[in-house]
Figure 1: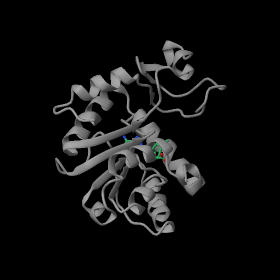
Figure 2 (figure 1 turned 60 degrees about the vertical axis):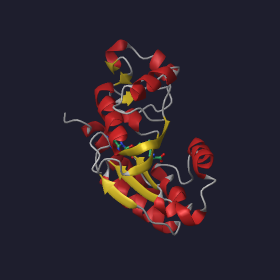
Figure 3 (figure 1 turned 30 degrees about the horizontal axis):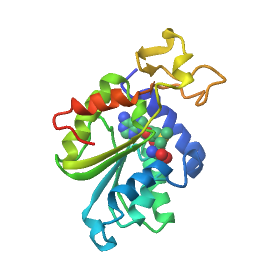
Length: 211
Ligand SMILES: C[S@@+](CC[C@H](N)C(=O)[O-])C[C@H]1O[C@@H](n2cnc3c(N)ncnc32)[C@H](O)[C@@H]1O
């Protein structure tokens, strides 16, 4: 099966069948904390000069709030159905963003373009090998001193700990969530878990470390 095919098929079907209801309508709380910590002192009038990319923006439940706070918002998602819903979500909140269907491990943006890249429960869809490439891409598209936020499944999760090794693509990635009592059961595409110290190492190994 081609790279990302199972994940793409899962999300295309999900967005086509559930529309707005496929994902969140209101933004992730930790993302909002990051935004507050990083940018609350920036006057609203200056925020249009701050470019923020959400990778795996899905139906736009986070992106509209970034745009509504006055930032120059960008979103990319593997699913073109997701991007269509995202467009409608942004419109429903009276906001705009630059959207594109594409793969976060091969970002279609020039180097040093973004002030921040944010990931809310999306880069976990990449097995380790693709995740390393994705982190290099994040490093490439960020300006020097740019910021990165990621909200992603933890290696402490029983979902990983209780899975048999036959269900693993690599040490951190399951082929999908097959145990029927596990949260996210039915997500039959690569699903990766990361420990905080591992995440720090991935970032430290990127060309120019960022945080
Ligand atoms: C669980 S959803 C989260 C959506 C959104 N971030 C949110 O919080 O509502 C995961 C999203 O990641 C997207 N995705 C998965 N792999 C991707 C990839 N390689 N490149 C871009 N998007 C990807 C999926 O299509 C899906 O929309």
